[in-house]
Image 1 (cartoon, rainbow, N blue to C red):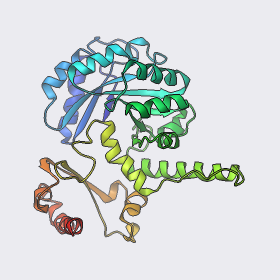
Image 2: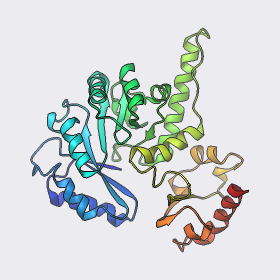
Image 3: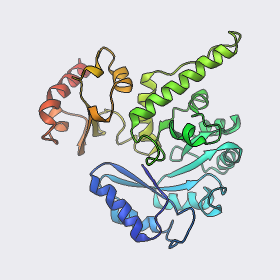
Length: 322
């Protein structure tokens, strides 16, 4: 998902969406207004035109907003007006800059007003109070953590709120935030969050001197889930992609298994999270094709990769079906 907050005219918005179309990837354009400067005031009304023009195929749309008026004034702050605009278009809302006491109060207000549900992911969620977390869990809202952004930029507590989310039963998705200043791949996000959460858990146990129960530690399967299925859910795409499930689209990331840095392969999930990177992976989607049926239905769309993928796909399917 791209959080687009610098489209100063309809032409800028068209160019931004067209760039996503041209890549051939499954993309989500979350549109909001510029935070400052001169712009055509085309948002949010222009979202209807964008949905009509581009809203088919691999591109979907969301309305993007900020949690409070602290950054860019009341016009961009999520509330009843923006929620109504999104409902009219039949799209979800992605809320950024959710952190600290002001956002905690906003979350409680949204919950009381019926403005939180599974179509409203909250981005960052650092430094929120316990009542705000309970409201998020009760309403089914989702959370997207940015494991490298929050510590590096220093967003509120600067600590990704994975422990707080899991404590109320919310499994978060992962995001990157600012690609121009941070690593732009999910392998880095998974490893960073894994290290931070386990560090916090061990540190809490150490600080208590053994007098308090040790917090649970997440594992590689957790962060892989956060980066895939839970990430798809925060974009409103968990019914389409995010897991190899019959009926979903075959959006695949093919991983090279024959490099020494990826050995041993006795733990495939651990190898994916701790060993692979963008140089040992190849995206290969099958637009319009699903992950069900014979291996050929989702391995024949990329001639360069197909000879290597077909045997692997066959083995995976045989293992899955016994």
